[in-house]
Amino acid sequence: MIAVLKHGSTKADEKKVIKLIEAEGFTAHPDTGAETTIVGVVGAAPDKKINLKEKLQVMSVVEKVVVISDPYKLTSWNFKQDKTVIDLGDGVKVGGDELTIMAGPCSVENKEQILETARIVKAAGAKILRGGAFKPRTSPYSFQGLGEEGLMLLAEARAETGLKVITELMDIAHIDVVCKYADIIQIGARNMQNYALLKEIGKLDKPVMLKRGMAATIKEWLLAAEYVMNEGNHNVILCERGVRTFGEETRNTMDLSSIPLVQQLSHLPVIADPSHGTGRWELVIPVARAAAAVGADGIMVEVHPHPKNALSDGPQSLKPANFRLLMDELDAITTSLKTFKVREKKIAYK
Ligand code: PEP
Ligand code: MN
Image 1 (cartoon, rainbow, N blue to C red):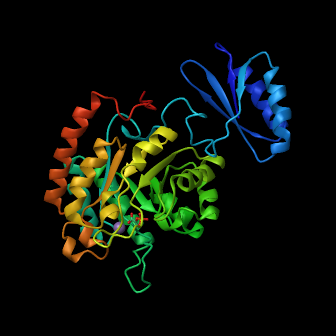
Image 2: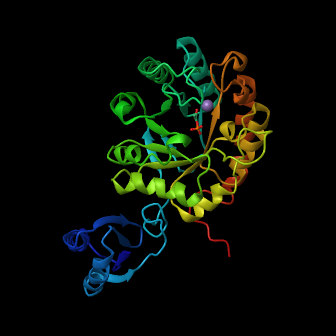
Image 3: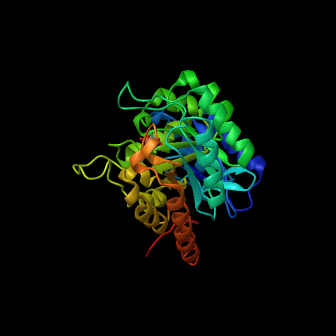
């Protein structure tokens, strides 16, 4: 449920409300908007809920109490009035007015490869460098990533180019080392429902990008985000990366409809990953264009200076020249989208 405070309520009023909520054994999540303050209530004590509702309702500072029956709480628009914007510093934001581009190789392979790619994607306008150092590979005999050495190379690329860094975390045991180097932690599709990992990430003060599981429903995906947010970390980004269907011609089926759907349900930013979504470089540009057009908050693409030699995901990696082409096309699309303010707010089409 949420308690909507009266117009003009003060911080002290908010504190009183929070105190009551906590005294009843629930967790309070205040959200101050331009007009009103709302205090979201979550907790697994359903028998105590009616009692709390009555106590809140009679408080003079409370305008009304609304019971939310949706399974989504902290991720939903009911609990937050403005869109979530993740501020990574140096003017780099996810969820803001700009389409944020994350680009780089699937895996960090060596110093030359990551530095060359970082320079290329930076020059073309990307703001965030991607690259896996801990890789979830289908086969145990495939390249597993460079581990901490890969993270150090990402940090070197950041120091040279100013790009922010996103990299995957697969294991609770690697939290400290990944946090030391990453600006955003990526939780991959295979770990979307690794609840122990999600809870640990939730205790961190570090942005996290949660990729949709390859067979996950929207509900499961948003509830996975709830796991992170419920522990206190509200800096969550979602990433649509395609789901498994019966088709054999593409690696996954890019579910473009999930992007506006999730944006209508949730205030969290949504990134599109057409590289894993299609598995084929020649489909990445058209699907990225489409993702921008449906209002994605950003695009993540795999770029490799020499895709044929890539140690992972070469077939879906863009060559530098094609990445530059994509960036020009995305520019044209986002310029025309600005007229409609597609990503700015919860859009209610009537
Ligand atoms: C990746 O981004 O390289 C990756 C492994 O993605 P996913 O978890 O979506 O398969
Ligand atoms: Mn990959």
